[in-house]
Length: 209
Ligand code: GDP
Image (cartoon, rainbow, N blue to C red; front, side, top):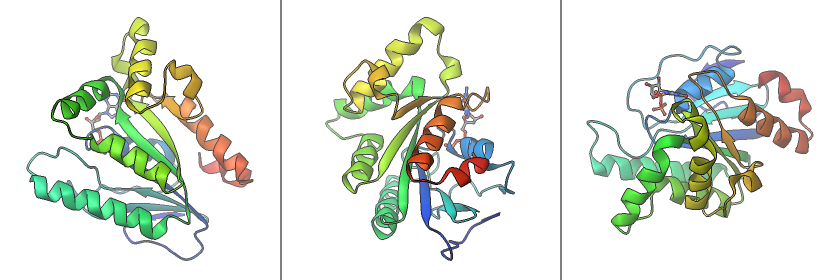
């Protein structure tokens, strides 16, 4: 059990890949999920390299954040996207699960802003790409602590719709996990991760989640 910056290819049978726009809380989430079990070091601000946590034969990979990054030029963002796509293509066989982390309350606006420019938002592109290459992909809708109780379901419906998943969002509870890393409310995601590990007959890995 250790965190490292280099891929520990040896003995990895399955990999869970975390992707998401910068600032959605992806690294906080990984720290919260696996930080107690491993030493998750501080990452340099902007990195193009994936960050790995090895938990017996399970590799957890945090891909570089895509989309807006302060001080980073557009071209660098394309490089980030290409790197992620290549990484996925090269490791598709062992990547059994993807987790797309989004900023829940912010997501519909982000998507609409791209739509207005006739561009496909990178989140959607990545979600579609992961599924196209056959990777079962969950959506972790983070920062739900910012949402009032009566806005909770309507927001999740909007998120589902923008991902091409016809509302109501409850129909997609096997894919969409509303969470709040800030409040430590990760249960919906943990339970989906465990469902998938169970389907893979890997209940032995529950101890890490
Ligand atoms: P990353 O760039 O996706 O790895 O995002 P970070 O983990 O660095 O988090 C970005 C910012 O979002 C930080 O200021 C976090 O404190 C904040 N954040 C993370 N999770 C939550 C959450 O569940 N709720 C709220 N309100 N803020 C969060």
